[in-house]
Structures are given as structure tokens and as C-alpha cells.
Length: 249
Image (cartoon, rainbow, N blue to C red; front, side, top):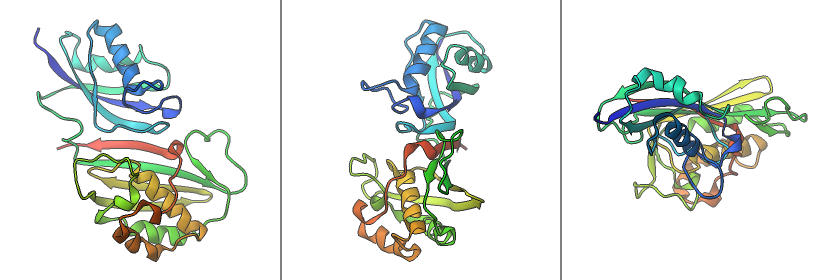
């Protein structure tokens, strides 16, 4: 049987993993998915993802593909793979994709969501999925700061030094950058086609520094211009970040 390309959408709790991509220093989501596929098909399959999420980052809508010679119907892979995965990873859907479909370069838009809890008492039940900021923050100033990230900018100041990108100027276009406040919970949502390494976490940390008064909303344009990571705010911890969805043509 000729090989088919299968597209899967994956949900995972990233707490126990050192990221998506296979690496020698700990368990990864990619490794678990590939092990499950080996058990299912007896093939040595390499899975290609749309986003290489970092250690501790979660996903609700990670997209990946793999080639297989298995005769299993495409839509049956979701259940079959999930039944062989740890309980903190699940394949939500599966379908056949056209040959040549690239989950990373074919992506037209991604949504990342970052969740924050404010107040002196740290949450217990949600501790794996948000950042607890115990000091008061000025959410109005944070909302103003978030608006500056919409549009096309050079995001060098919001990427880490080890960032390895195909684009030499680190320019990205952000379609939406919005802060939503509900009581003591803050949700930051950012949409765009692609992001630099740790970019969303560094933006979020900068927004929190604005809320704490360490920076001002009006400082954001100058931080862009500086092209210097040291000029931006802190990096937010991985636990609050989730890749929500990825859209294609």
C-alpha cells in the first residue's frame, strides 16, 4: 500500500514534558506520539508539527502530520493513537491530508492564550495552567500596552538570544493582541501567522511589568526600536501558555 499523509490535532498538558520536540534531556510530546504510532502500526514514524512548544507549555490545538502505510481509516487514527498515549496527551481529530501539506509552513494563523491570576492567595486547582502574580497590577495600563503589539513589527526585543529563525529581521505581523480582565483573572490572547522563540511569553511578561509599574504602556514603541531583549520586560513562566488553534487555507 502506498503511503498516506495523515493530519492530526493534538491536545496536551505540557507540565510533565520538556517540550514538543524529541530531545535527550527528558520526555517530549512528540516522542510519546511516535511511540504510540509504533505500537499501532509497527512502523517507525516521524511526526512533524506546526509548532515546537517549549517545556511546560500546553496545547489544545497543536497540528501534526505523519506518513503511514497502514490501512487504518484516517478518521480512526484519533481514537487508536489516543488509547496508546499517556493520559495527559490526546489526539482530538485525524484526517487524510493532501501530499505535500506542511503543518508548519502552511499555517495561516495561530492563537496563543496566556492566563494569569492576581491577588495574594495562590490558586491550587489551576496552578499548572496559569501564572500567579500576587501583587496588584494596573490592568488598564496593561490593556493599552497590549494594543501596541498589533501590526507588523520587528520583535527582536521580545525573542531570546538563542532564537533561530529563517527570517533575518525577526519581523512578524500580529493580527490581534488583546487583554481580557475578569475579576482576578487576566487572559492575554495573541493571533498571528508565526512567532519567534519565547516571543509570547516575553510579551506577556512585559505586559505584567507594565501592570506592576516597572514599565509604561508608552514605552513599547521604544522597546521595539531598541531591538534589545534587555529593554523588554521579564519572561512569563511556561505554565500559563496554551496553543489554542492553528488555521490553514
